[in-house]
Image 1 (cartoon, one colour):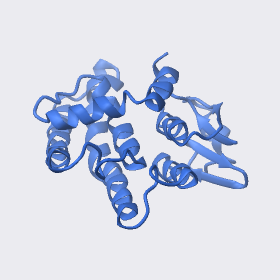
Image 2: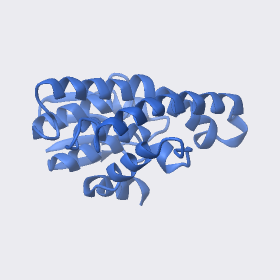
Image 3: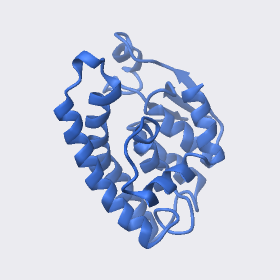
Image 4: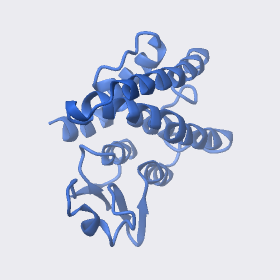
Length: 202
């Protein structure tokens, strides 16, 4: 059984969603944020952060790497082969390096930090940067789709939609990117996503 260390109101949400999509048995080992986090996670993740995964003797950290492992256990179509395996890695890394930094800059200065700690200029810069990335995604999805790699939902969709969940759930303006909005709506309404969202939102 997969053991996901973390809480659903963290990046562990992505891993819970991936496990649901894969149809694999899992348990969530509840480790939340706070002063004891580093000590609680030291034996599992040397970075002292959540999430982390135990799969037998394998220990993994980094939520998107965990998801690639989970998808690999499930196989196709969740984890494609051939050229689509490379495209899955491409979009997963794009989620981490292009989409997430901008999304988090906006999020920290819009709804995560206490109001007195928010920087409106930083929030606006994050929103502008995220909008530029979403324009790239809009063009890609509009040219193909309905999913990132075509007709099949893959872990690439789970990973990128998981990264964008906070923006989607907290009112980021998706009106300029209707195809992205439709893709996010569809991804986050899948039965596996709803099961993960119930843990996060409930």
